[in-house]
Length: 83
Ligand code: SF4
Image (tube, rainbow, N blue to C red; front, side):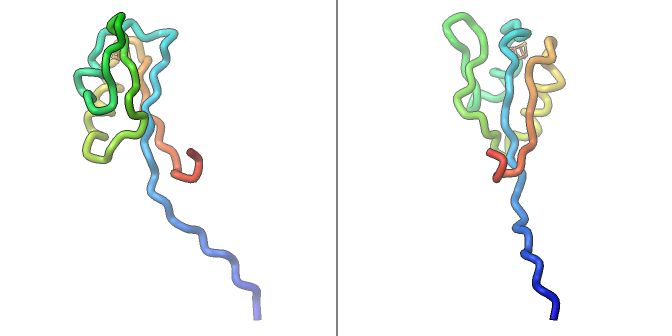
C-alpha cells in the first residue's frame, strides 16, 4: 500500500491594492472608483483604507489600473496563505 500524499487545500485568491507613491501624481481616478478602499489624504493623494478588494469591486479595481495615467495603481492576486 502506497503512502497517501497530503491533499492540497484549494484557497480562493485574494486581490490586494498597491499604489506606488513614488510615481502617483494624485489624479484621483482610483479614489473615485474605489471609495470603499481608498480616500484622499490632506494633499489630495490616495490613501489606502482597506487593501483587500471585495469580489464585487474587482471590475472597478481593474478599471482603476487601466485608468491610472502614471501606472502607479496595481491589483495583486495572491493566495490567501501568502498574506
Ligand atoms: S489614479 Fe494613479 S496617479 Fe491617480 S491618484 Fe490613483 S494611483 Fe495616483
